[in-house]
Image (cartoon, rainbow, N blue to C red):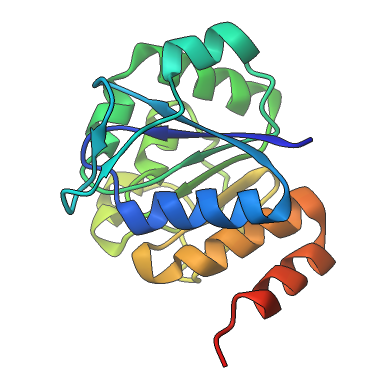
Length: 184
């Protein structure tokens, strides 16, 4: 079973985090939400309180870096994500080993701080672009460059989630899930 880590810090953008969690779980992934920088429940940007499955330190103690994918949601939480020494260490290791890592909205700035290769083509929330100077930048909804996937923001959360499903389970699984979630 594919294992995915989604760190949740206070101020996370709910639609970005929960769309990814929902779609990946529907596809069959074991998605682990991990609290970062605060105990449960974690309060998102729009005051939605979410119970993370586990604390980040517990997740790392249990699985180390044995995640098929790590996905960073955006929102004001990115400051809390970047302030976590444990998370930054995990991200640096993943980037060094070229392991699949994804970020949406302002979260690509966390990858940049963790040492993302400046040759990596990315996208982000438009307001975060100045912090990503020096990276090849695109305004596509989702940008995949090697093992790094980035996306623009809440309005691209479904496209982002489906791209992650395609990476982990193949394009047919993503198309089936897309078709299953379209309302008539």
